[in-house]
Length: 181
Image (cartoon, rainbow, N blue to C red; front, side, top):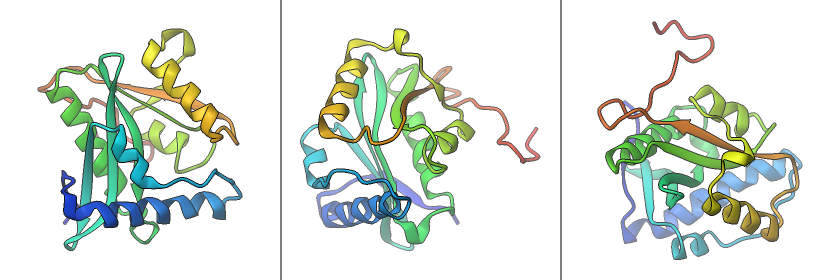
């Protein structure tokens, strides 16, 4: 059985913070030194946070904002103990479905280009590089905020996943290596 995806409740705050910090440890293990941050600061500016429960425990989160008339995935984090079990993928699909339900035609994000669980992982889930000339002013500001925060320690990219309609929220082809039609 997959994770249960639901909106974050106030009782989840400490669990969401713990998941975010634990997920950040993967960057340290990969030699990526990010500036220290308090995940609680995210709550000051995101519009929605979805959590993924596994066996009744919060093990993942997806935080979003509206940028340039679309949904922007501000943060996706999964506790490392639950990595590679579909938690992150389920959260991405929930974000896309929610975005389409709101009438948005895309989901954007910024991420490290080369880390396997960043750019390549999102690409396998239907995201593609979003060329800078196509960015709106909101994404330009988001990029500047990330630069000022000091997270540009490795090559970063913006990515986009186009959504067709609320009735088909997150189209994508089969994942590489899958036998899906």
